[in-house]
Length: 332
Length: 290
Image 1 (cartoon, one colour):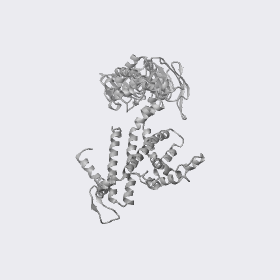
Image 2 (cartoon, chains in turn green, blue):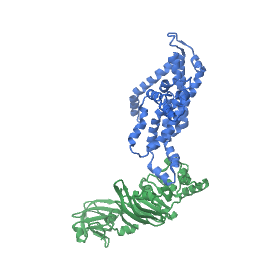
Image 3 (cartoon, rainbow over the protein chains, first blue to last red):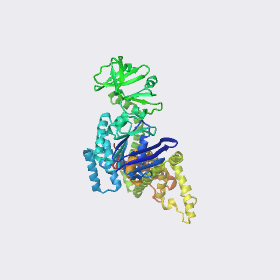
Image 4 (tube, one colour):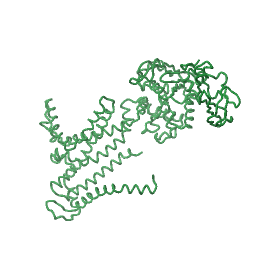
């Protein structure tokens, strides 16, 4: 049972407003990802939920109870920190057992919970090691293990994968998703990586400058971005934006089209341009095309399309895949 | 940087310093060793002769030796206990965000810059003096019989004075260590339900272990050879109540003019210091690993 509700929450540091006014409902059992560029207030928002920072205004409810002024330990939430924040002088067992020890649980309960957590996370062989003897991914799992033994109402993750290398990150992403399927506990996850957000989330909160730009499922965000910021942030490579006369012809201040929604052709199309760089990834080919009066446009073509630098390419957006935005950046 | 060439170069560059230090240490040490086997009294110049281990026999047979040894250990132990516990508590206080933090820290460090003779004199005449001292004034305000510090509790007085001098050092080192504790670790412990006491004993104290070890080792080295504070306050008395090994050796060499006997005492002190250091390294040295 872990629904989290934020009502008109705001946060100032001194005179600087980091979060002006946010209201958000997180339902029980959901995997919600806060995503946004650095400095957008996503970590601050998570720390407000955790109770590590005091709110400047508004109400935080967990499970329908007002927890706005409650100490972090009493909120029954667990957090996984970016640096893992493992206790270096304790063994893995000591680290995982620590929250239970603080609760005053008896030794038998602790042993059982620790062994259970260790088997879920494949840490059984490492229980007697110190954190410094573990690899990055193992440390990450210890941090998660420490979070799950308390059986919290919700897990909070603060950019937990940012210290891992790319391959490990994909693995841990899967493991965290599987853990969520297994435990069915609410999870709130902060990241700046939109791929993590898209792959893991039930619902994504896109934050920008302390405001919620859009709150919805990954596919909603992809297919119906509410504004230009969300459109540009979600999707990789990022959406092409065309301004000026070309956009006006289509009745918008800005027109956006995703690289994967452009069909390249050697003979005819809406826009013509010169290929600057062609990146052949095998499965895909990314073409960075320079178009006069429009600027640079990225095209994602299938891997067997043979375009080379300096060639002319014609591009046509697919039907219904053109996004139009007004001068304020709102979707039309 | 481990090629043959860099190693040779490194040795060459280091050699002047190493040779200088070696001379600095070896020449006095070997002279002391030499004198300790000589019958050498300054009252009978030119009559030195080899006596074997007689000096050592006399030194150990001196009933004051065992008193001095105990005093030395009590002094070191007492000061270490006060400075380490007090230093940790002070560091915890100074780590709090307060108004005028910089100035407060500077004030705390100040006693370390006062030379031992001066601070001992200040303590003797302004604080602990049974007639004019601040403590006796306070005692009289409450109608209590003032304490004659150096007469009634001489060792405690010396320990207090020396602790006052070394507390800033301990505080400073421990404070630095405290500030290097990862903020997220404290937050994680807070979320895990650790109260202030648990936080201190489970997270902060283990983190400080290494700094405390360093303070302990450095202080022990200096505390074994305390002299100035004793010299200007109690002069080793009353009786031998505050005579430590250093002071005993001083008495023998410069008051009794028996250089041979004092040298033997010096060698004993060196050996004692090494034994203490060895024990300390054994006990706490593992904190320095990793």
